[in-house]
Length: 290
Image 1 (cartoon, rainbow, N blue to C red):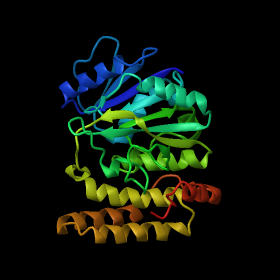
Image 2: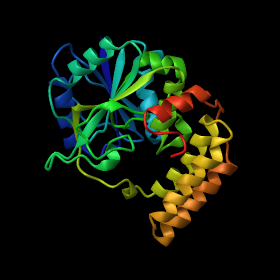
Image 3: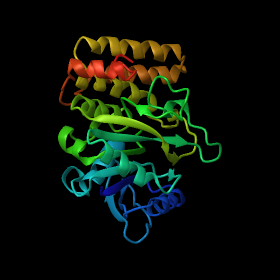
Image 4: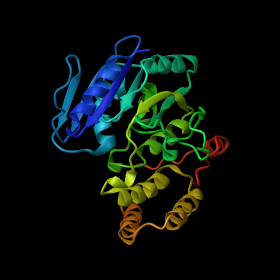
């Protein structure tokens, strides 16, 4: 299988980006062609052979990654699969690309592989980085219902069949939107504990827009993808969980503002998943009400 890699950057992590690019070039097997997308900023100095695209404005995470996909031809058709990697991450082992190739070749309906993210100093994998409800054992690989945006590999046939990431989301839940569409089309998603991206431990709330966009995009996600009877259940559960987490008053205000925005603004094309996909998600351990 021919692999490519898409990395988006704001140009503010030159040392981390260079280390990541070195870890990609050090992968076993055939060379991986890399595209670095400067998302509203110059991509900076990159090694010879690495292609760059500089965008005049920040298109957000899904928008930037979609530009990187198209750099490999329509829906990435010039390669068989694309790695999407955070610019402050690092592939921990040189066999990750080969493991991806073998996994995709062994299962023709495997559409997406999500890697394990580990802190480079402690080796700890945060619970939120294990994309399933039963996340106590991050060393257990399994089928899952979503994937991690900056540590994954996607078969480009999936993108050609179900479409790209939803650009309007800008930040948050764009991976789950693509994952649900892929699962509805019959593709599988695997979490692989042996494919590791080292990444410093962070909190998602470090982003100023976190609470508003998480809430807005959660509503869009449901409106776009869920059968109508499940929409109020899904959003009701997340409303309850948000309140139980007792966020600060400013955070809660931003969250409710995003929640209202999700209902009052266009969410894109609605394509509700089949009920058999709902059952499939349930059998994988995460019914689409949570």
